[in-house]
Length: 257
Length: 192
Image 1 (cartoon, rainbow over the protein chains, first blue to last red):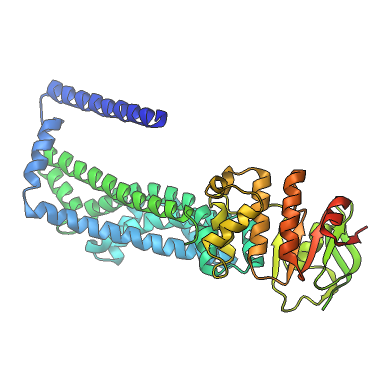
Image 2: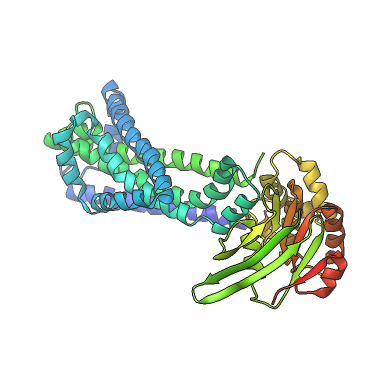
């Protein structure tokens, strides 16, 4: 009860903080008086509503969503797969170490420009979101696997617990907190990097292209509106994915069926 | 077939833990392993369980035996409840009802059985670990101070439960207390 009241209080405090900054934005826009420099929040909502009526808008959302999600899911699949291999075979970890270190240190724009030479611009955002997410998922999952309670694994060996049950009830509960926090970081990052790749590569029909066009035509309202779209999709995607993961985590705590 | 331990040697770095230890563990009987702290009792159990490799010596009579264990630490999955912890190791041999009965036999209450084991006391966890060891089909069981953290009354209850479950099976039980060895009716094997 007390916890629930506290949560509600925090929710309202946060909502008020958002409203405060929206008011500051509105006031700044009125003070400047030129929509070209700083469009008002109301104008952004109006532009967003007008954009959302066109099929082109939903086409762009679908285009970017599909590619960035593909890159993200592929990075999860390969990140987890290679983490398992690295935990099992030290040479895999040694081999991957320079690769992940280089990816972590290289500016994302360098990868975007290089990737444009290698692959078509339409698949660029998938590749870049993969590249940004892979090291985070790989390194965190590997850490999680290495933190699994060694004594529980010995217990499982003595009691001849099957491989599937070991994974479900010994490995996963210890790895999941690492994996969930990695996904939480990676989800935001894949959208930022993916759209940045689209703005540079300009694949036809993408959110990045629309954002770039709005900038070229000095349509500040649309620049803000597309930015809001990216933020909303990114948050929704993150919430949906993390809710699914946490449900899985709770399910595992129920124990063997 | 008896288990024969022949001149077992184990060292960790410069420290010699087992220096040519030899013993016979009779089949179908309870053997209580006693000795001062740090004399290598747990290491011996770990070698017999196959968790630690010895540096020398031989062990005969373990081949083909199904083993079970109560470890020095409980080694329970803390997020799971007592039933799930037991069920984890005995996938096909016991259902939830049977497991609950076993847990009740060692004095655990219904409300404790449903809680994650992280919320149980040390003595309760110990009993879950004991029931888990008895729940799997086994020929030989290793127990490392199984009554640690149990009061006298609970210990009596658990000893009764164990004697009923161990009938005719080989058990090697580490204990510091000669009274426990007497309660179990085991042969005492002293380690120096």
